[in-house]
Amino acid sequence: MGRIPGSKKKRMWIREGDIVIANPWEVQDSKAEVTWKYTRPQVEWLERKGYIKY
Image (cartoon, rainbow, N blue to C red; front, side, top):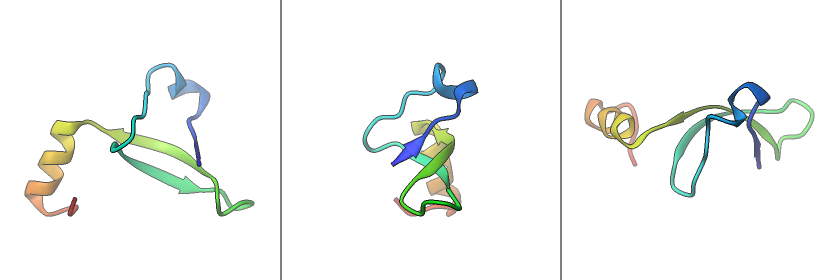
C-alpha cells in the first residue's frame, strides 16, 4: 500500500501495471510513500538501456 504526497496527489494517477519508485516507511514496513511514477515511454527507454527488466 502506497501513499502519494499532497504536492503530487492531484497530478499523479497510478493504475495497475504502472512502475513506481516507493520508499518504505520506517514505522510500518507494509506501507510506503510513492516518490515517482514512470510513463510508458520512460519504461521502454529504461528497458532498452538495461536499467530494468520488465
